[in-house]
Length: 103
Image (cartoon, rainbow, N blue to C red; front, side):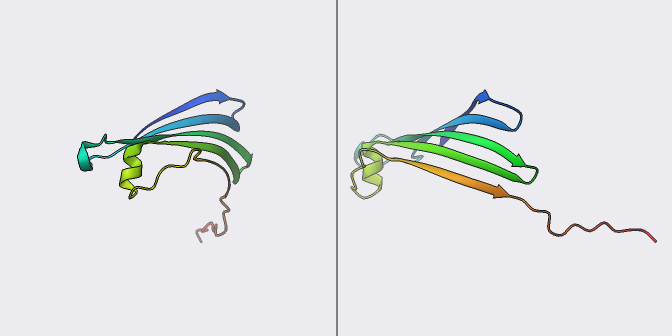
């Protein structure tokens, strides 16, 4: 699998957009001399730091499947539209912080 990540618009130091493009290919030969290129995926992501320990990611993804991928999946034909949106809230609390004092 190969991928390209491109940060294409910074709004501020705490907020930005980026995109990632993945290329999926099989490292071994497929049956019946099929193309090893299985498809590609485009991700568009919004990133926002809400507070010191809280971050928000939201994104939209689109997958472009080939006939070779359908063969690998056992003959299941690809859907006409393979896309999804998602939201991720990242909370990293500092629960156990202890400062040792020398006596």
